[in-house]
Length: 204
Image (cartoon, rainbow, N blue to C red; front, side, top):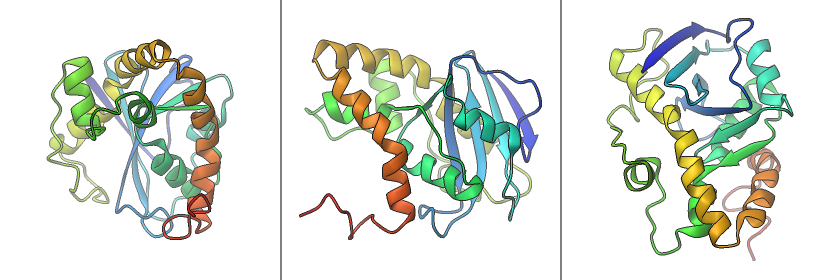
């Protein structure tokens, strides 16, 4: 595993191919209140690229282009949150997207264990630590433990997608999953506009 750390934006000319795994680290779990601190990305090649986002930063041109590129699939785990965070920070609509959490919930209905740690253990055979999940991501200097944690959230998503996609296809729910993925950017926008809990327009 190789971890690359950048400040404010991705470097010019960096390519992730046709599928890029993306995750975010933030100061909290409310995208309307809490700020984006780190964006981590991987092409599934054993390299993780971490971008620290400064407080008050509103532009990251290279990252924004990648998020909006229709030729690159953006792969998330619980994309609803990350997509909302990225839109709030940079005003960019992230698409097209694929979400391993949604895929898991559609086909692994025999369990309530849809967290990334459980999925990687059960489907990929990788055990990742979540010890740094609630650390201070707004710090100007990331610890080695924080870097390793951030990297682990994206390094294995490509392999996880392959496993979940096979189950979705086997169970005849791949098309349904795709329609859910297509809706995710709109779902994230609704959250930012205040139509989340308890005002979710899909509730009774």
